[in-house]
Image (cartoon, rainbow, N blue to C red):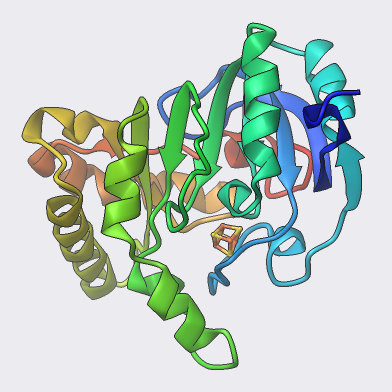
Length: 240
Ligand code: SF4
């Protein structure tokens, strides 16, 4: 047995669906959701991998076998996959077998030498910080790590930002913060179509209005409108 084969990760769910977000939206993919996160977003849509972590330990061999029965594309998500050194071994094994691997990350921790086909970074704006409680100060101190983002940009990348679309003042504040972050990350003008604005919205019936609110910022600033296709199709349910 190799060292990599002995590794395991705490997994909260794994499933096959379509990619609902980002530049590869609509792509059939296997999803592996790792439990555990160094942040505590106020509006976290997967609290079973952050606020109330669940899941069981699964050998990397078993995860590779699961993905082997599915599509070429694999999405390793969380939680925060980069917190766990074993994630790099999982990604290596998947890529050796010909999979295209996307890593979903908040981009606040080093990547342990990991190489992905797409690093999907979702830096958290101030709107993510808990109002109060024991995690508020810790989250605020951790959420913005421009040097980490710059290092991760050595891989093919995308940046996704969760934006409040109401009221207008909140939307404007979020867009200003996105611009400040992009300047800190050194994002070039010609790469702004790799920056996606996604509405903070988990209700399918509210998505159209939320998208519409983001269109002016996209058209005037060169950002891409970030879909939440899985919510539009399935609603906000696990395993999709
Ligand atoms: S980084 Fe992601 S998983 Fe972690 S608390 Fe924020 S939204 Fe939830």
